[in-house]
Length: 236
Length: 293
Figure 1 (spheres, rainbow over the protein chains, first blue to last red):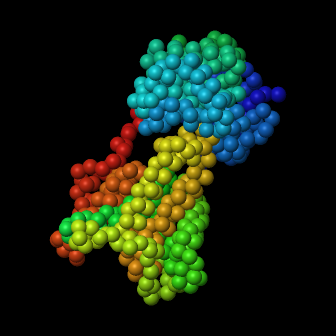
Figure 2: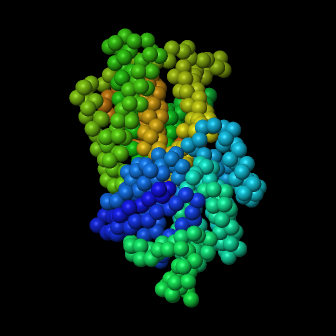
Figure 3: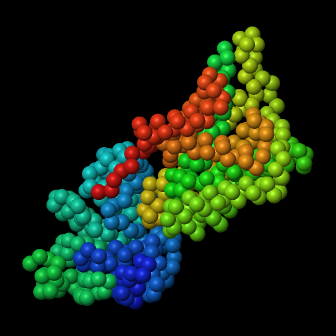
């Protein structure tokens, strides 16, 4: 059974249908890339999975439990974290406060402290800047903070929305290395990216989304070699 | 000597404004709405305390506690019934609903308690302090009000800084969507904010009516609006801002009443607001609104 199963999902914004019946699944341990152009419905899909939006039709099942209508704050405690598009760190709060909010669902102080040290090991820069307001970090550092904050809840699956958006090429590489290491440490990853090439290069499988529909799916390597994907998304 | 006496009166009145403004500013910071019915919660709180003391013969501390409990529940109910269904609605719809809730509370009070002015007896049994050989008299109400305001501020700052619920409030006020993704229940957080704000309104009401004993269904309206001014003055959304804004507003009001004109004092208060907003649109301690890149 898949860890995360999306079935016949349809999402509307008022009268406009953003997602037109998509189905896909994420297996435990996989890195799945969801690629597509602006407005294809990638972010909407992630928002629906994590409970920020309720779909009109279809179901979202996580580890055998239907979470379609569960509110976002309850889904977090089931073991799903979501790094939102644009990072959305709490700008006026310190880096440390941001990280602690990431562990909001945890009550064991020792466990939180232990996770915090792990995050600092993974992102030494966050420790250096722990007392700085998050809004004063650079874009790349904010992305690290957003990821660290999500990892503070010790998720079994992490949804990442455009983690490389607006970052310098050096940071882009660093972010993708981090995603690889998050995956290597046993967390399942659902990655939404416009940088299709990078995303597919670290993914196991991929789905191509076009105006609310999945038009192509398969092994990441096959998608990288696919002529239509190359033409539309890889700029080749 | 009279200047110091006026100043103390101003600080005392300002402390009441500050306590009310805290409710305004917290609700604005977290629910991003102006609860114009906040002033009327003060009035309801005062009536509850009045009835408890005069009609039910309850001891004063119990009466104040009862008033706090009723207002807390009223605030949470108001949020649930009037504002929660409008979470996705336009700001204007929420604003109009808040004004509607204000009139609703005033008219409910009119229906239950009547239009006659009730004379509120002070809840403070403290002898006035005489200083400088009896030239400067500080009333018990003044001392109680200022002390209450400082204690409330200190508690609130500690709560926001150290408690988990306080951190949740900070997160919701910054970005309620991201806060949900942390596992924070935004509805519960907003409800808690209304509960705290309304509990403070009850305290403010009792203190206000102890100093200015005429209680009518419209008692809360003007202090409510002035506390709103104080919150904007200090920077809406900021807790220390509400405190500073409230005190300054009270001092300006009393001093202008004493030295300029008692008829013009309200006009002066509102002019100060306009000047502050022209010079510093975010208020004294208001946050700069950051553009998202």
